[in-house]
Image (cartoon, rainbow, N blue to C red; front, side):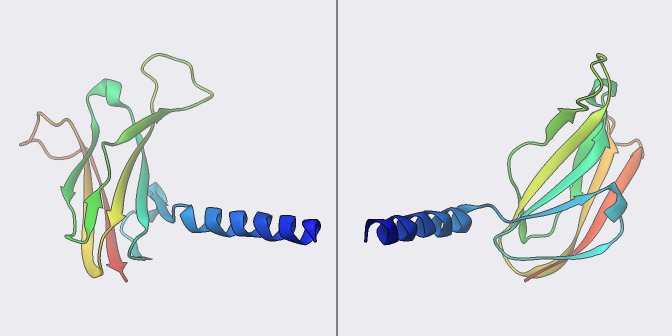
Length: 129
């Protein structure tokens, strides 16, 4: 009886933990220009090469109404590179708050150089359901 109760409690904890886990849709440089599908309630995560010591960072140029940026972009340095000023990965997160179709457009630029063309761009054609 005690063993059956213990097994039930463990299964219940596992079930609750699984329901609390964040559902993410992750994309990177190789997905540039692709058409993707995401679900309402998911977090869309874009991880792109970046080096903020140069002044460049990924800026949101266009975002569909059904995406809400979640916090500020996060920079992760390469673990194997301890050189000051080395590049790494910039991660931008967006919550999928509703259904729709649209384009997420990011530009790699210096924010103070608004009238200078972007160094790079990244685009996703997104369908959210």
